[in-house]
Image (cartoon, rainbow, N blue to C red; front, top):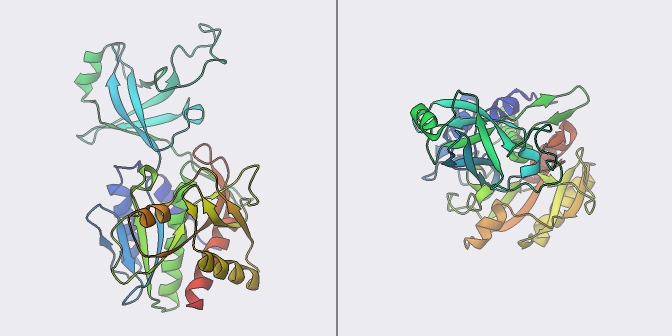
Length: 335
């Protein structure tokens, strides 16, 4: 069984889209530390060839949901604009870090306006929007001037506390299993290949703008012609997957993935008794979708561990992560 320390460490590094340099450095240093020669792309993504001329890229995204300060209110609270598809109902009450351009970090809480049960009788029935919510700073600030004196400005990053928990049952609860669990899958592929002294024609690619739609568009090696995307498997009433399986996506909102590529993955899962489910994701796009829209002439497939309550209080299981690792390795070996 894999050691999940690197997953926890990566999860605990704030990395909303647009603020991923520290998390990408962690990935770069991890890969370098086990003997590889990773590179940064111009956009700040990390890529790493396991062999000499990669024809398969396996990608996962390190960027997460978050927010950005969009204004300072006269009472000293902050307006915010979401980064990615943030669920406001799940984000309400969450602790956040506000990161300034001078790298100073302040803490706060995302709240509904007039949130006290003793002061607002309609609190439970009112819709949540960015126009009736705010960030309360853990500082003695009661005016816009108080806040600006701290050095907080429009454009500062708002990062949510991930609350990583790993349980003996194998479950992992944390924000940002989408998609730092996928990054961990790539770590384990790299580690396995290094231990076995295998140099497959594979490139690992850690994108850093997936949550805002353009993470997987550029940066791959010119020799790549296949793209295997590792991202969270959708769980829901209309889906067959669960947290202990590897989900194989047949189609998402961008359209179907490559039929032959998917068929090969299903056959390998069946042959090797890897727990899996095939699903259609109705409200979903991936780095594979972005690559195809950018005009990449790739065969693309999408798999990943099942993640419950996506974009909210997420949970997955080590069995689902390890099933995804196993299927990746079987596909690499089959080539």
